[in-house]
Length: 537
Image (cartoon, rainbow, N blue to C red; front, side):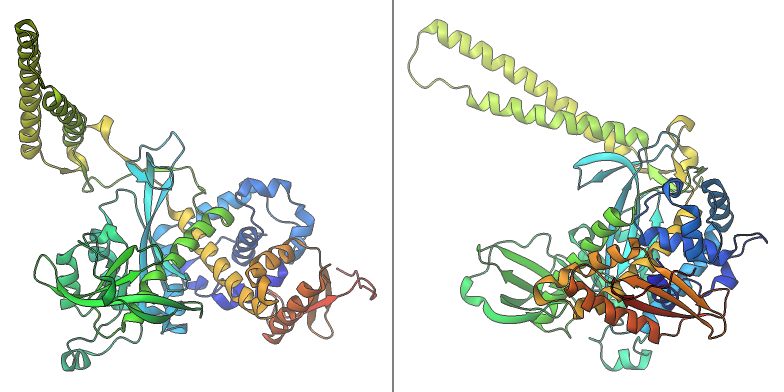
C-alpha cells in the first residue's frame, strides 16, 4: 500500500483538509483516517467490514502505527467527518486544483447520470429506470463531470431526479462557469461570437433544441447525439478522415457534415459517421470552432466516462453505502404527484388493450359469400367487438382528460405522509467518494508510468500490475539518522513486469515525499530474491 502514498499526496489527499475537516484529539488522527480509507480503496476492500479480515498490525505499520482502528471506531470518525457542507467545500477545492493543473482537459467536459440502486428497506426512495438491469428500482441519481480521458472532477447527488437537462441548467452550468479555468474574457467573446467558454458533451437524454439555444447565448458549446436524425445521408457524401482518439490512437473513419436547422430554428452542425455495417451515427454540435474529426473524437470519447463508471462500480464499490442513516427531504422538494402517477399507470395499461382490440376488430372480415347464419354470427361478433372497443376508447379518453387536469409535480409537503420520500444520509458517502476519486486519479497517474515500460501487447495490464503490488509484501526500513524510510518490494516473478515496476519506484523516489506525521523521506526499491533482504520494521 505504501507504494501509492506519493501519488495520493500529490493528487490532494491531505490538501485543504485543515480548512474543512477536523477530528477531536485521539490516537487515530485525521491523517491516519484519510490515508487508511485511500489504502482500502486501492486494495479493493469494498466495505468497512472488510477490515475485520485484515491483519491489524501489518496494516498499522503502513500507517506508522501499531494497529489500524476497529470498524466501529472508523465508522464513528467517518460520521464525525461527514458533514455535508464541509465535505462539499473540500471536494470543490480539490476539483478546482485538478482543473487548474490540466486546463486543456476542461475545455471539453462530459456529463452523465449514474443510477445508484438502493437494496435496503429503511429509506423510501423514488424509483428510477436502471438501464443496466432493465428494471425500475429504488435508487438515487449521481451526475458526474469528467474529462475526455475519463478522469473525474466532481459529482452531485439528486435524491429526487428532475432529469439531466434541469440538473445541467440549474446546477452544473452555473458552477462550471465559475470554476472552469482559462475561459475567454467578455471582450474576447464579444469580438468573436462563435467562441465558447467550454463545451459540454452528453447523451440523447439531454436532447433539447431549446437548451442548446440557451447555452449558445451563454457561449457554451454543446455536443450530443441527434435524437431524431431522420433518413440516412447518401453514401457519396462521406469522406475518409483520420480521427485521433483521446488516448492517442488514430482511427480511419468515414465522416460527413452539414449545416442543419433544428425545430426551433437554431442552426447547428450535424456530423455523421458511417461504420462498416452501413449504420450512420448522427452528432450535433453548436461549437463551430471544431473540425469534423475533432467533433467525432470528442463525441466518441464519451465512452471513457462510461468505462470509468463501470470500473468504479466493479473495483471501488462506488454504489456501496457507508452510512445507513435516513433523513427527511425538504418539504419544498418537488416530486411526481402520486395521483398523476396512478392515472398514468392506468393509461399505459389501457392503451395496449385498445390497440389489440382495434387489431382484432380490423382482422375480422368476410372474404367469400357465405350462408346467412354465418353472416348473422359475423355481424353479431363485429357489433360486440365494436361495443367493447368504444368502451375502452371512452375510458382512455377519460383517463387522458383526468391526467391533463392533474398536476404532474407537487411540493413534498402536499403529498400524503405515507407516500413521501426519504433521502439517504450523504455526508460520509461524499467523504468516501471523494477519497475514491483521489485514489483513482493516483492509480491512473501510476499506471501511465507502468504502461510506458510494458511490451506493446501487454500495456492494458498496467492497472493489474499495480493491484498486485498493492497486495504484495514489502519491507519497511527506517533510518532516522539519514532521515529516510525505505520501502522494498520483491522482484515480480515475471521479468517483463519487473522492468516496468523499477522505473515506477525510481520516479516515486524522485518525488522526495515525506511520510505524513514524520520527517522521513520515502525511498522505493525493487530487490530480487537472490539479494540479501533487510527485514527491519
